Length: 327
View 1 (cartoon, rainbow, N blue to C red):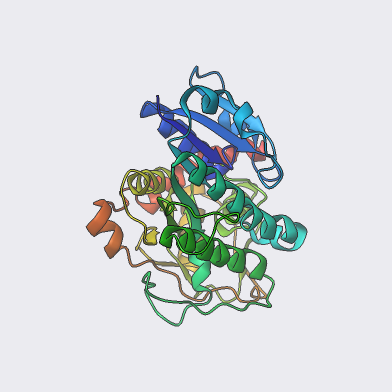
View 2 (tube, rainbow, N blue to C red):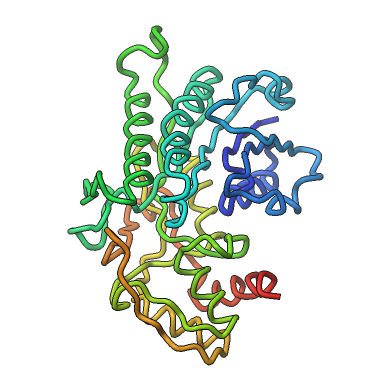
């Protein structure tokens, strides 16, 4: 059987990846230290006969050969999706973020090279920073403040791309030895939402949905004219796995090209929740991108992928999940 390792497997996106991989007939090991992941995200798969969960920090874990599925089946693929991605985490655990996409990427690439496994790292639209190009194509190098409060996330993702792309080229020595080029690549993920998001993670979807459900004013950072493109999690996971099953090694944007202002998004949340909440404008976050919309031409051409779930449809499902957090 084909074995896939998912780091960050108890996280928002990682848990959906585990479910989908099991549905496709893989055996799966999820590794997560639960810094931001939740074991409850894996409730639907925890008893699956082809699934193992390991609570560990991938920046420190070394005993890979102790994992049951590696002993039995080796390793077919690695999906490196361990990394906190919330604005509130940037001040709380910046060094953990820096470490997981530097040391964590080194360790997981090393594992993939050892077993000749397919490797995909989760990159992000944040590598484009506050973009001067709109919409953002994969060829755009970005406009990132390396000294700002978001740098611990933006820059570590840029570093992970540099590490993976260098290993793909097969240049230099790996651990002092020659090596076969990495069969790997990277997906650049744009704003994703859906059930299982942390209610308190500070991103715009959970923040505004929870506020609306509580009847509180909806907090808008800035004047609300900044834009985002929201992709429902099941659409994103289909794109990630299409990339994983491809032979692509170049970065590919995965996101929904339908663009909304934050004010428009907030009004949609109020409408769906039937809330009496008002909008409350507050100070803009430092380096918060003013425009964000992916150019997904590459995903359409090479992966035959584009999102299908509308914002309204996805928000209805997401808000139903958030209701559990407000009871």
